[in-house]
Length: 322
Image (cartoon, rainbow, N blue to C red; front, side, top):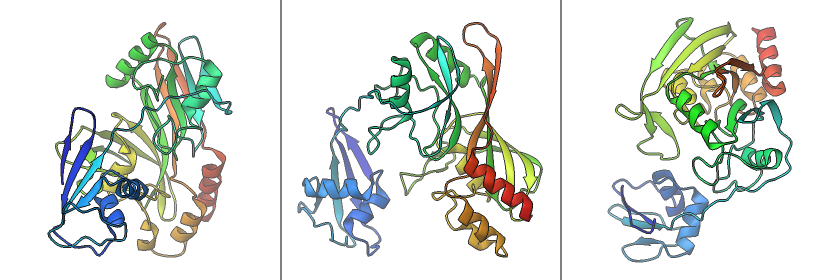
């Protein structure tokens, strides 16, 4: 796959079919490009997908030797607007907030999620957030996945934002997570040092890619369940999906992770793994602890958030049945 971007922001992809898959072109391209199937379908309808200079139907099945050209226009700018949405503020002063984000909430507006995000809620709560970064994600110092719950730092002003971002880059902000993984670690503690980048085939996923961005994760087992472990994890870097990718890489993906651990329980013995999988409705991953120096006073700050109800119930069941 080749990609070219022109000065006006249009991205042009050229995909040569070297191995027929039998898939419709919308599904085929969604697997090859960083686009959803619905996005590909919209591009086809707009005449921005061509096979040998012909606009295909969505039902067309690519053949060996086909050269598919896809032209993707630049996204329309997203502007975050205030919305009255309840949020759990753990700490707040004149410079920043610590929020306990619920699972299912997107951190900032993005294509497909223009409203109902944490940023929308914070703009209503605070009024103004730091302008550092893109217009759609003001104040965001670091992010959490949609289905990861827990603590996140949000800056109110530019100076605070830059100081916190600097602390994060220097690894001075301690971020610890609670996670459940399938199977059992060989050791009680381990360190995973493996570069993370885009998956070479599925651009919507991340993977361990030598030579990509440095990623380091420290892992400690807290509890050993029947066919899973409860872990405390410290992020030393903050790559997209880092914990999920590293746990998959070492053969112990996060319980409930539909993207990196789908169906993993079926390879484990007995009924217990399947019963656990049925009880976990989202990835078992929670940002539980934050510790850092206040960006102005230098005072040491520590925050913690217990497992939310859905994960706490699962953990109690796992302990009781192990």
